[in-house]
Length: 519
Image (cartoon, rainbow, N blue to C red; front, side, top):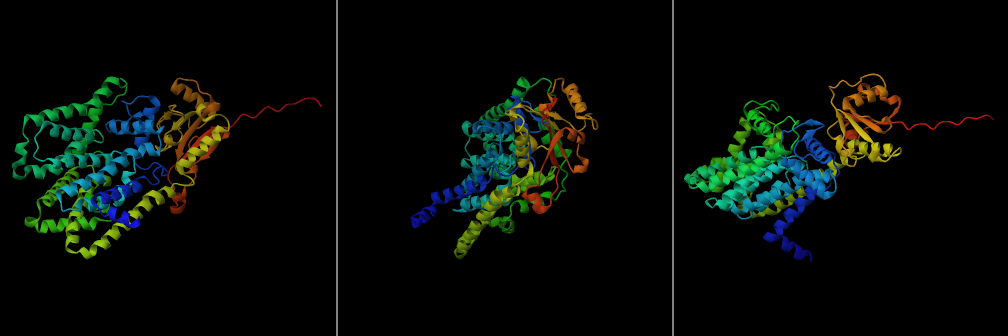
């Protein structure tokens, strides 16, 4: 049985199944145990408010309009939440995980189609064991979704680079449109830059200047406009933000006049190698050899090097730079590394076993780090435990769904962990004029005036965050409220980290009257 299985995994089909199976384990193990991290808190908060309000056309972040990304990346999460029975770690992250898994498959397909046999398989393994690719694949943002869209467009083009049928153009441009609806117009730009060297070679672009391409582009443009039109027609008239205006701000204005993320011009010279670890040496060697022997380098490798160079130049020219913006380059860099490694192993077959063993060790190690070690750091405390503690304490007085939740400039992570059967929260910004001193009665009177509705003080929980106990906001609520504080998790204890913590003020239960009488 063992020998039969080993023989099967040595076949082309079996090797692909092994790659995809191990990749699935690395992507899914411990997915639901790590608390929200980084930018995914925004996606979680916006998707949660969509589900709470039933308004899927006006994105809000902690009660304030926040339309900096197109709607479909949020819709993927809300759709997954509906399928899985609620919003949680799994429903948040599953779209990114699926996109990452399919990206590994697409890298395999591109490599097998354009390079020496076996290149795609090695490229798939290199990508599946790339540390930062795995990390970002398990995060609920649009970045890995964009990586998948770019790879899908490139794969589709290479299936028939000289095919001029309308259907071929339509699928290609629809992929670009849908990718651009996930994060921004880079969904159009990056595949174009990657494919430009091949289109310019031998004048191939002239073949594609026809009315069929123009018609397909118009159809794709109309599809791209659908979410913005729906938002305009069915969104709240008082929302106050335009999705298309923010597309221009985030994709055009940011490029030429950045307003945040001011990374130095050498940002990607540092982070492209870092984001391709532990396999950065492979593509760096492949790049050096390709440039050194350019005239003798095969056409596919030349295309890959030129496409990577154009994308790298585009990101560097953009004034707004962040480390993870480099993610779309990672699969193509690993493909370049795989092309070199395949050629190297063909001339040194004795090294094959060592490389296979090294990739296998990397797969195990990366899976343990992202699937076991990282989730462990969030155990025994943190925001997950805080949400559980608050619900347990409040439920001693009344069922959880009877409580009203007020959030005073809280951590973006918090709302996910104190969901209340879909009931919306009341958000208060830090700059509002709530009572800094006084009593709980003063605060409740201010809250009633601010919201225009009556509040039951005995069924209202107030959340806030604080850097230290000395600067705890609303301290006066402690006179007639129990306080639940965030407890440090395993990671905080291990590394002595002290980030902003959350506090919940839960009304103390009313004391029963003491009966008195004559003896």
